[in-house]
Amino acid sequence: MDKREIEIAIENARGGVQQYLEIMELFPLVDVSKNGEFQRKFSSFYRVRQRPSWWYATYYQFMEQAKIQKPSFDDALDYFRQSMSRCEASFTSKLIATIDPLNPVWDKYVLGNTGIPRPKYTSKNKFAWV
Image (tube, rainbow, N blue to C red):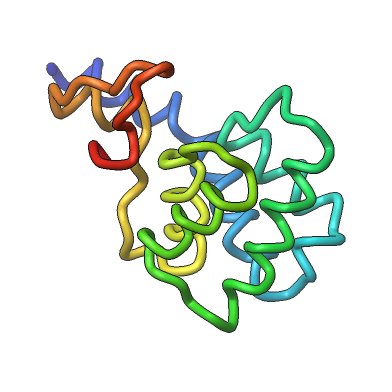
């Protein structure tokens, strides 16, 4: 990248950085299982869309409990597998990284930038892959 491309990339990132900072500022201050502002900001930033209401309730309730329990990625992934019957690796990583920003986010963008292929949605061994 040349200097101008870097400047453009930084400028384009400003909005996302501000959204992230707002999420991280609100997170310890509110009950995320009940706070609509936090949920809207988190869902917008991480593109959590088109989920049934029970999914959001389960996810944000677990996130609120996780503030105290500090689960590992594996424990959180297992919880969502049991409670939702889904492999939610990406959203699990985002939850864990919100609790402790030193943890990585695992999503299609990170995988794409590292050259690691995503498992297919219908893959039978998703949990083994993660």
